[in-house]
Length: 416
Image (cartoon, rainbow, N blue to C red; front, side):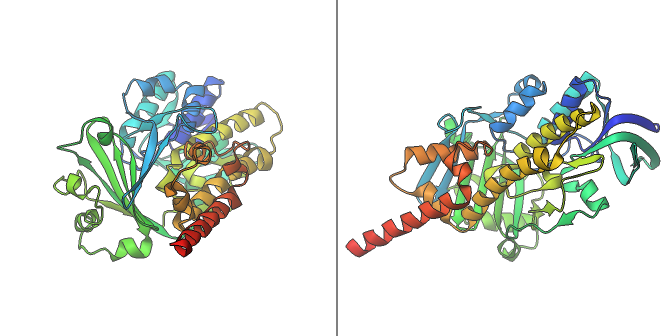
């Protein structure tokens, strides 16, 4: 890789970077992607939302993904004690995709980068960004690959580096998240006796208590992703000298899944991510924009990570293209405000999940079909649909309905 000039440098080749690159490449923009890892590589974020299917379709990446026969995700199941709440994406308030996938991200992301390379996009793997400089007319990014230093001159930089947070680190933009500190411990297993039919394919959130839950994400290749999420204090308190011992002890807390998984071998030592929620002080600047997890990561409970990544990646690419075409862009309105609208909706749902209010709505009986349709649209990723009351009034509707449920329960107690 020699020192080169491009129109747009994209940092990171996950879903956000790939969607950005695919869009700009179709528009005739000279794009280069740099990626620190060597693909395929493991990463979490294995459960997608229907909303992101629109993004892959728009940029021409959907058909190659369909050929991989990933596990179809048509909804999600939540289990608490002996109660079950099923969401069916075909029964949602907002029109749009009714299904998506559960994916091993190593395979999923490799499919995306392979397709981009076929289309002629230049991707440099095993390449680390160590410095970025901004000038009046261009940027200069210093890279290291296999011990050699290179420079990329670009008119614009899109940072889609995910947890790497390249520009937030280099430009000191990181700031603590307003969400509570939670952590996750997770691994993969190759199921030897997976149940037949829907039970063996459905994504499930097994709620162990208000702040602790267990994810089960089956893939079409026979592998299942399992992980526990709880307060950082709780996850760190689990007995065990190793991640494997901690995971086995946590599995004992799941009445529903313990027997199914107790004898399965972990495909890799369980990994832990502590205090995963993150934020930044600004999402764009002169000649750069930050997308996906590089900008904001909330919580895995509603699988919003990849959808925010692709939504922001596609929008950023469109706005960069406008700017390169000498069209004025109002980044505060067209990018920040728009993305924050969606982030704020999901942030509310994460907060209301962990304080118990949203869980009350999920498991209230008898269920209200219309309320369920509206919540289902949020869970499908359609968090920008202001026609949906659970989007428009997100900051008070969940709380108010939970209060009414509490009053109803109090009345039942007094009458009994």
